[in-house]
Length: 306
Image (cartoon, rainbow, N blue to C red; front, side):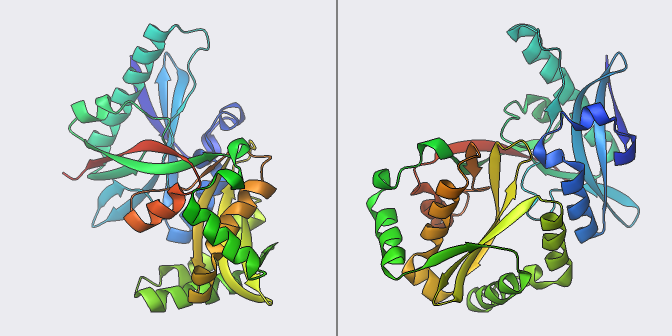
């Protein structure tokens, strides 16, 4: 029998912390929790008092109702499996399924509403569907960094990159949230989108990520004028970089600054294995990301609303 227990971060054993997915990193979760003023916990699945899986959740309360959802730009909820390494395929599949069924039952019992975007490694959502959750497939693009080759880019991407280089755009990697605020403010005004990113809590959040060595920022310039910025999260295991946020002005868009930023990441951070664009669910954005010859990856959103 499996059972699920909810624990605070300080109760999590050091040995377990070392096995967690990047998206369950306590330092990362703390940054998000402080930004939104919420609490986070770990749901530990136990079998015979041995932890076999861990999943983080952010809890919110309203009118005495407790619910959990995916916090803004915390793109994935991971489930870190800690099964015996010598399990054969049959036992591994069914053990994982039992873990997922246990988590589904716990979430259904303890939370009025649930909305989570599982990390792509969670490919089996049957346990949640059987428990009455809806499961919607979503998509992201992921690039194998070792396979990046400018010469193999499609014509549109090559043209944008050529335009950026011809215009003498250059990239600088440094930390300055004033550039983030400035370019994001212009984007919000032009596109009439939410000014959420301009709140002090968000700028402080970015500083906290950087202070914990969890992210980097690059900026494309022309004549020392910033045109586009891109911030990406850095997995501590040197495996995956995750796209976090970006913004640019009209001149940057016209001169191909976004393409130049992406090219810089792929060529200057190739000590990482891959780059996750963290979403390909909006048509125009998905088209831009697809131009870098990426793998289309499926992940799931599970939801309980009653």
